[in-house]
Amino acid sequence: MENSKPKQFRWIANDIDVSELTDKLPPYMFEMISEIENADTENNLPVYVQVCDDFEIYAKMLVPDVLSMEEWHRFCAKYSLLE
Image (cartoon, rainbow, N blue to C red; front, side):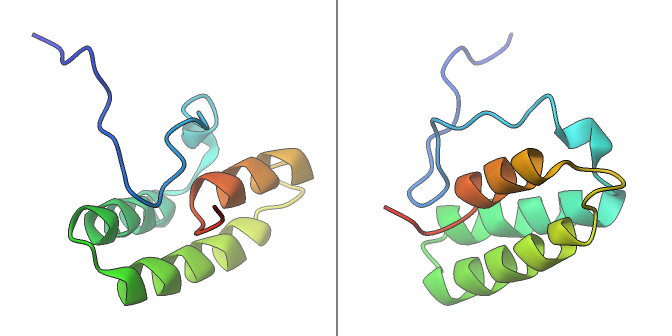
């Protein structure tokens, strides 16, 4: 049985959906997303900020061959600390 309510995060932007873009990401980016989610769940702000920064840099290296600039911005908006 699937959980109908998606997991809510503290710092990850719950209202931004990037699910249709994740197929474009290489495996190491999924590991980073997992680290980001774990840091958020564990309320570990230093790790969250560091991994988000790393994610932003690695994702930027995928532009324009894998991700468009708009897609990169969406990932950055989802995995950042902007409030």
